[in-house]
Length: 327
Image 1 (tube, rainbow, N blue to C red):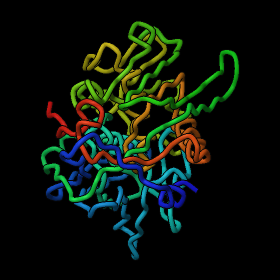
Image 2: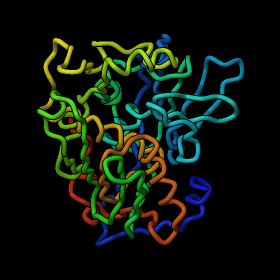
Image 3: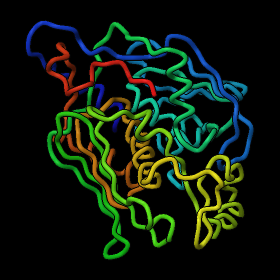
Image 4: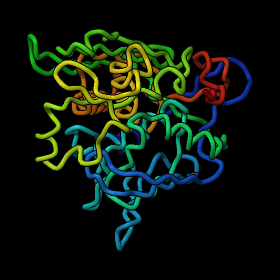
C-alpha cells in the first residue's frame, strides 16, 4: 500500500513569498567501501552512486547473475529480527538501517546502492563511516523540489503490557525530532543516560548521533551465532558487555551512546518511507519491528499525513534548507 499510495497523493506546496525552493539531494560522484556483514560475516563491496530526481534510494544486488533492484519502502521490509531487511523478486538486502540513517541525517533523497552480497558492511558499528563516504563524495542539489511527509494527526503503535510494554508514535511538528527511552537491567547501561532527544533543525547529526555504535551482550552471542547471526560482530564494530561490564578497550563515544544508537537505528528504519519527515517521533523500548509497524499504520491512515514541498525556504523549519554540516 505504502509506495503506491504515496504516489497518488496530492503534493501540497507551502510558500510565503518568492524565494529558493528546497531541492532534492543526491551525490556528486560515486564512492566505494569494503567490509563484512554484521550477521553474515561475509565480505561485501559497497558502491554508492548518484541517482536522478524522484528515484529514491534503490539497493542493487550486483552479485546475482541477473542484478535485482530493491527500492526502499515500508512494504519492502520483510524481516526485522536484529536488523532491517528489504526484499524484492526473491533477492534481499540485510542490515540497511545504518546507511539509511546516514541518508536521513544528511538529507539524501536519491541514491543507488550496489552491493556484492546480501548484507551491508557493518564497518565500525555506527553510521559515521557512511556519513564520511557520503560527505567526501559530495552532496549535489537537484532540479526537483524535496518532498516531505508531514504528519497531521498522532499515530501510535504499542506492543505488550506492563514491564513488557513497548510503543512508538508520531505527532505533528514543524521540523523533525526524535525522542527515545530505553530500559536495560545492566550496570553499564544503567550508568548512562537512558533517554535522549535529537532535533534535526538545531542539532548536528554527524556530531551528535552518527558515532553511536550498536551494542550487545555476551549472554546472547552464543544463541545468535547458533542461529546464524552476529557472525561478523566483534569488539571492533560493536559495544560488547558481559553480565557486569563493557569489554571494549575504547570508552563510550557519548555519555548516552546506547540510547543514541537507538535514535540512529530509528532514523534509518523510518527513512525507508522514502521521504524526510515533518514530525516528532517518540518511542519507549521500540525496535526495527515496531518502527516498521508505525510506518505501515501511518500509511494506512490517509487523513494522518500529507506530502508537502517548500517553494520558499523561509517557510521551512530552521536549518532544513542548509547543506548538511560536516563534523
